[in-house]
Image (cartoon, rainbow, N blue to C red; front, side):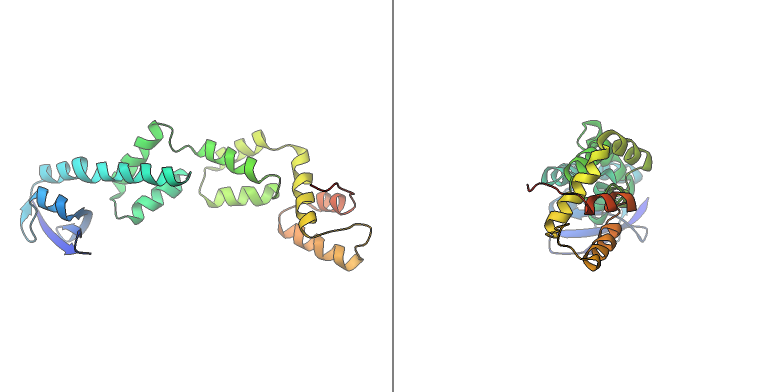
Length: 204
């Protein structure tokens, strides 16, 4: 048996504690259907039923809703669910559920991310952004190898130089030095930058 503690968050939302430890969130109608009362005891079977029949079902619905609004990595989805006060085990179950249908797929996400940005950003910058999203390094390496061609860096550089209105025939040494520094911070290599700054490239 576990002792129940109930803490109102809003008029309709309540944080449920078991033996003084936060356990999960219930809403007013859910709380009523579970017949939980502050200070009373609850059995392990009752807790398991609440988790599986109410909390997990809500977590699955929330995961689906989050993925409908935008594509997310597994880590991003997990973080969002944890911020919604779902228990970690429930989050694991909800993530496995949506993964089983292919609704969250870090390989697909990484591929789409790379293809949509490789004409505007350096390979190094894209790699860093994907790593920051906590996608497994092996997946990032695999997708970078699959999606990137040598010409892509040149395309991204030309895109950035057009945005800077760079004209190689008129740019001063100082202007070129500033562009070197800017492009280096963007993750392009010295050789790529040197080549691009001396290219005549067509307009979009």
